[in-house]
Image (cartoon, rainbow, N blue to C red; front, side):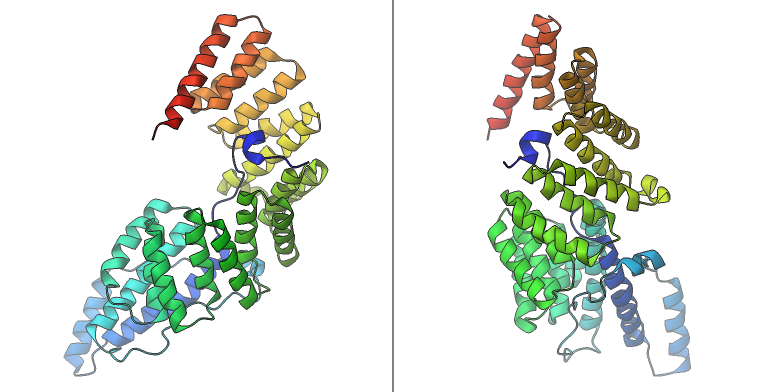
Length: 390
């Protein structure tokens, strides 16, 4: 029997799109090269006075932040990250101001890509807006890729895929461009095309974990938990010390109805998360406890479920989902008053939480408060009508 994460938990339990560590590595490798090329291209060779003037301008120019991965992050990386777009062939105008402008656009495009993968969408959009005016006439695969990444950050998926198409026409063996084009298809809801693109990225870089991870999430969205499990299991094999890998696999186990293995993988994800990382990435750790609690609840172990939801709420006190699920556990345990309190808090945090109104109405019925139960049913109907409006 398969279990729907949407119907059972009211939410898809996926981590932020992408893997920040690999993007940091690519960024740390490529950006200094780009900045170096910019500096060398802008350094005049005419006279000492010109050298001093250029040096003065360089010192006064604003510097872009460079994100460097930590030693731990380097240790976690796949040994064979995919090739990123590089200027091939070298454009004939590489000494011109237009070329230098495009290279600045590449820098902003990469910065936007990194910010997007880190979940800082607003910063990604700002950087994308800075990149696009500098990349009006892309020439190399790298420039087309970076303009496509900027369009992707702004939600211009048709424009993004058009640029990724151009990059692949120049160099058809760029796994990362297939990956980004797949991401654009996925955001548009075209999961079949997304899977096909991830297939190509995996064919080019079979030992690189990120496309497996993305493809696994695409299979989750399609409800194909067996194939999602196969992809997430491959990620675990490639990254056995990565907590996220075990968590993603646990989602597939939950979808398959294998709650014991769900609990085991969530527990391993919790074990692999350093104490100092809990506060830095509380949202991810909240998911681990949340899903494990849901699995315990499915097994009828309500005390352990409630304990995990308690921890999830402590880590993320504004998480309406955790309050709702704890309310369900209390209700199944027969404690309707505590269930009502948790449903009420979930509604306070999310006034449009239909399932919370539905379940609170049932809890009110159990304690004999029929008027309040009817009020919640009326609110449920109102919210459902609103959701159906075009």
